[in-house]
Structure formats: structure tokens, C-alpha cells
Amino acid sequence: MHSECWGVVLAAGQGSRMAAATGGEAKQFLSYMGAPLWWRSARSMASSPLVHGLVLVFPAGRLEAAREEALKLDRKESCGVPLLFAEGGERRQDSVRHALDVLPDSCETVLVHDGARPFLRTALVTRLADALRKNAVSGVIPGTEVTDTIKETDDSGLVSRTPSRERLRAVQTPQAFRLAELRAAHERAEQEGWSVTDDASLMERTGLPVLVVEGDRDNIKITNPQDLALLSEQNPSLPCCGYGYDVHAYGGDRPLMLGGVSVGGEFLIRAHSDGDVLLHALMDAILGCFAGGDIGQLFPDNDPAFENISSSVLLDHVLTKAAEAGVRLVHADLTVIAQKPKLAPHADAIRRNVSRLLDLPPDHVAFKATTEEKLGFTGALQGIKAVALVTALRREN
Image 1: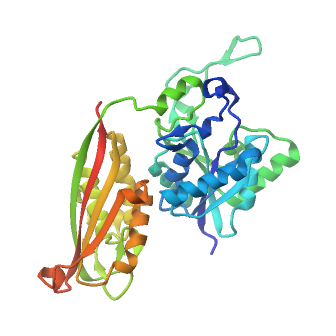
Image 2: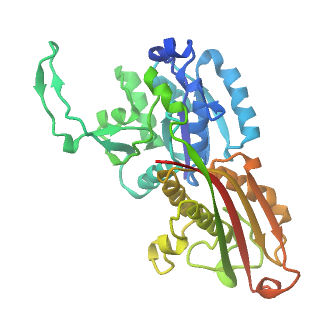
Image 3: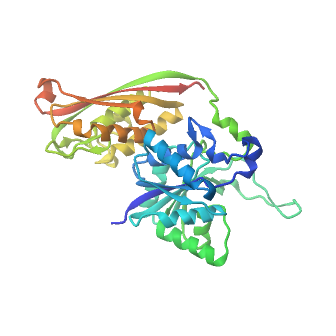
């Protein structure tokens, strides 16, 4: 079944407007938080539970070097999804077309993102992919309200029109599309000589519907020299921590999930959501970093909207709230307590998947499993529990 969603990260631009300020280096290759800007974009996209793989697009002259750097970074802090590579073209739309050519047959939808937008939040990625899945449209793009009055001018600079800003939106990336329709739009653009600044424009010119959903004002593109100040810490941060604890009973109908990984086996979970006890404890710990309540308040177990929902999707919402509160996660220490099943065979997969979901290097996520020596409800095989301790930095406003 062809149902996968893949991301494309465009890092092939030359960045001529920034050349003087960056010493000639293309902006997407500038360092931010110890890695190139394009890597931060890639990590954020890959952290979405709805993204199955990434295509990274680099300039022809440095494709091999950038590929090696990407693979090295992935070994150090894995994206958790397959990485493919494509050579950039002369124009942005050429780079996108080259990326579409290397997507696997299993891909049905695609998200195209600019590598020079390093402040992308994973929740926006998930929101776009989910909206495309649920709506009868060809594309879904993020947009923010325009606060300035916009004037349209003629060739001499005289104002010719003032459009109503209530219907204007400043458009961002990533932009989500159905792959077959986006490919067809690019083919027509080649045949008819179109030149556009984003993929949504291609879809519009072919008459296909594109939906605008709420974007993120912090999802800024590094474009001008003054934007370089955004790559440095602007506000002081203070350390904080949060603690989470959760329990689920055995004897239900949900397969055992831990940290977004299917553990399987004979022990089924009784739960309203997917019953991932580890991610539930983790979410409460994150919420504790900014006194954000608990998951029972955010996702009530009597709300049909959360029936059998993936806890990875709920985690996205919690991480968005944390980011809005100025919280940046640094480390997570996780423990599952269960007499059975044996979790050692799954420990590395759980740790790596949680690090992907949190957009943290694997060595910043600890996972342990233990028993209570056949004591208590876990010893009696009545259920499973988890505890989580999260450390973070919280920006002072």
C-alpha cells in the first residue's frame, strides 16, 4: 500500500544576499546548535510520527561532501528515518523536481521545506501532514496573518491597489502535497516554461486546490544579514526539571507500546489512547517543566477524539506547548517497571525512537527497565508503570 509521507529538505541555494555577511558560505550551511541549519530542519521534520523518510538536496559541487556530513550527523544523533540524497538544480523548482525523482514508490505524500528555516517545530510538520490526509485538497501550506498594510504598485512605484489584509497570508514551509499531483505540476511547469517561488504556486496555476492552515511565527527563514542574530541565544535560560509517573493495567485490547515502539507479546494494555505508559510519563514530566498541567487535563480519557490515538501525536502537542513556554529539553531519564515482558531486547530501539521524537541526541536519552522482584501489582502481572525525569532550559521572558 502506497501511503507513506516523506519530507524534502532543500539545501541547494547559493545565498547570494548573505554572501558578504557569511564570508561566502551559503546560509543553510551556517552552524546552529552545533550543526548546519539544514540538519536542524531535517531533525525537526523527521521527529514527526507521520514522516517516514527524508530527501536532502545539496548543491551539485558539494553533494558528496554534504552527504558524508549528513551520514556522520545521523550516526551521532539519528533521525530515525531513511535518508536519501539529490543534486540541486539552477532554480528552487529544479531542486524540488530532482528530489521528487528519488522518492520511493511507497511515498504518497510529500512535505517540501527550506533548509534555511531552522526553527521549525515538529508539531507544524504533523499538522500539515494530518490536514492533507483529512482534507480533499491537493496541498496544505502554513500561513500567518499579515499585520502590515500591503500596497501594490505599478512600474513607476505609484500605489495601484491596497488589498484587504484580512485575506492575506504570509506563506511558509514546509508545504505538503499529494506526490502524484505535485509531480504532474512540475512536469507541466517544465513543458510550459513556468518559473515560481514555491510549490504551492505550481498547484495553483494548474487549478488544484491548496488549503492554508495556521503557521508558526517563529518558523523564520534566515534570509538577510540581520537575521544572523537569530542564530545566537537572545534571552538567558534557567535550568528546570519535570517528573512524570504513569500506570496502565494489563488485560485490555491494546498491543503493548513503549516509547512509540511496538513491543507486542501476550500482555495487552487497558487504555483509552494507545496506552504507551512510557510516553505518558514523559509527557507529564515535560509539562512539569513549565507547570503545564497533566495529560489527563489535556487529553481526557472520556473524549472520543483521543480514542486509540498514537501517544507520539499527543507528545507533539506537549512539545509545542513546551516550546511556546520557552522550554528547550536537554535530557530525559526514563524507567519502565514491569515483571514481564522482558524489555532488554527492545531497549535500544525504544531509546533511539524517543530521542528522535524529542529531537535530542541518543546520548541525551536514558532508558532502563526493571522489576519489583515479584512484589506489588507489577509483580503480580497486573500491569506496568513508568517514571520519567526531564531536565530542560527555560527562557526568561
